[in-house]
Length: 333
Image 1: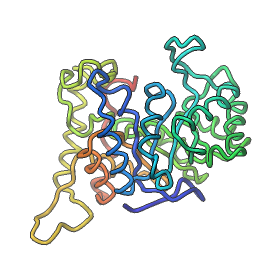
Image 2: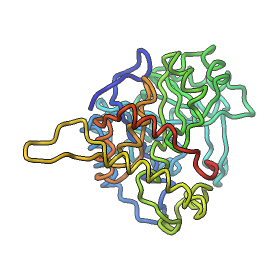
Image 3: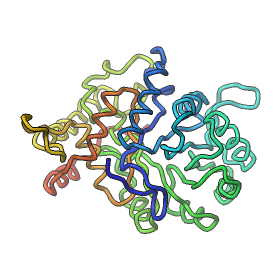
Image 4: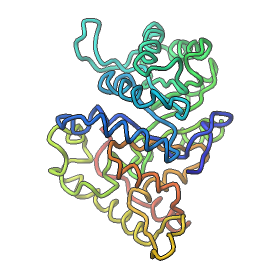
């Protein structure tokens, strides 16, 4: 896979990474976990050149970092390992809670706990999962900067932030990356945040670049979602909205059918069309330098399909049609 860097001057990594959340969290959670396959998917991602491996302490909670740690036990040096801090999963008594926690003492404690679960002495990227409105970002970011000074993190990044928040963080310590949702049906960050990141040489890491799987064409009705899947609570997946949003998928599929892989097919094979997932990812990749999507999957076939997006070449006409897609029906959450 072709490579880029984690922003200007950052480490080299593949132009596509792997989001690991769904391996233990959020999607189809009542189905038996298949850690053996998930570990194989992480290994396969590294073999394909998808070297950015992204997790977080809140995924599971905690279990996702443990799984990633086991997968990287004998190949840590091949991964650009990223995790996150700043969202609570439980209170001091162990009761489930959900909300931001940007207190410096929480960051200082959490980095050591994450390193323990990941089985490593450092992460390549430590990210603030969400800004805590009760704590000045300068205080939280200062604590993340301490992890760099201590050698526990090589770089630090932000998630779901405004340009103003990035600037405030930059005044304390360089921002290596910004992770936010970006796809053909979530383009909120294209007006201000992504242009600012490009100007500053900050990597932009799109999560859910496939619209939480919707843009692949896998879901045509609300009932296609597993009974325990958190997407059942999301406005865009409600039946009326979903029916309207299928028009976006139809356009992506139409472009996929007339597009083809950038790598010539082997001798004796005919033209190989791109998949809808590959077109959707190729559009995200086209949004600028240092844009590194991290599609999540625990399925080896889907991983291989996603990796192929790096070889899809969309024409200017294709990109114009995709840019012109309407805003989807329903909010993000």
